Image (cartoon, rainbow, N blue to C red):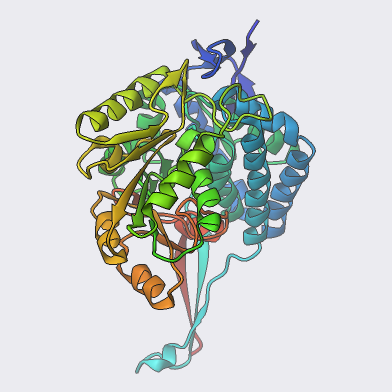
Length: 475
């Protein structure tokens, strides 16, 4: 019998009025029954977060840090269990899932540290006439209730990027995890309860975006919406959010430029990882590669050879590199995109087919920039490799996109690297690395339709707090 989960509201596990089956993306077996929250139940969660606001706001920084530090210790003792949960619900290969858990631990460690570093500054008011004999300083205060909406692709670490800074800053949270990956969120809620987080400070409600998400976005008690997902949903959230603070981490079709003269032995392994890790279901997954014409043939030959070595199959098998996409619909969508590319002259160098819900790692050559695989976010193990005559041409192609999250360039020339860093219109430029590089304390976010605001614990704390100025007249 499948595991039956409950809503987590006000520190209690509450039976929901209705449930839906959660199936493994790989085996399609039922792995759990997941509650479908009603608007009334979401309202109860917001009520609980509202009641806990003062408790969290007044909690000393060292206590907030202590809760996060205990969470780290609890998660460190249950790494294998956490990785298995991710592998089951998301079909993430178990070795990659374990990497995610270790990154999640790092994320909460950073959050614990940042809890003790939230501060303002003093201002010299006598720099202006009339400011004499006054002392001024700023403080940062929690905004209140955070509405967090998280995606399926990093169900534990992207939850950490919402919960960690929110708790560090003294906020309360109502979390809506992705419908396909709620088990990771429930697991973290259990650990935070054990770590001593006050009742109501975290509430986890699962269900449809039309019910749960809509209520979070429109309820005036929610002061911040932090969302990771598609541009279409993100734009809708921003249009409805009113005066709420909104952080949106949206889509991308991340690109890499490979300049003439670089060592392909360094570039190829990183590029394979960037393109195919987690089945390409990463916001900064390497989707487009622009290679200088002098290296193009050698690059393609080596890249295709290494791609063919990847093992597909069961996510619980430690030898698996690539497993199932998150849904059958995504398999059908990506196959149709590949077919469109073929009909418009693109060459399938390897892959281009599916086995069950597993899309075989696919390399496309000479794909036109107007094709869906080029200009939209593919979110699948598909990468296109195109030839360019110069880095300047490649920069133009990278920038010719509705997205701008991260981009990478490999080059031996410092001036070329600095020129690319200046001209690439993205949130982050990775020099001599793939655009898929991320560590959890760096600022992370994009431009254009890739979103607004920045994650990375310190930067997320800033998004989840507001500045207050205090002026003391000594006269």
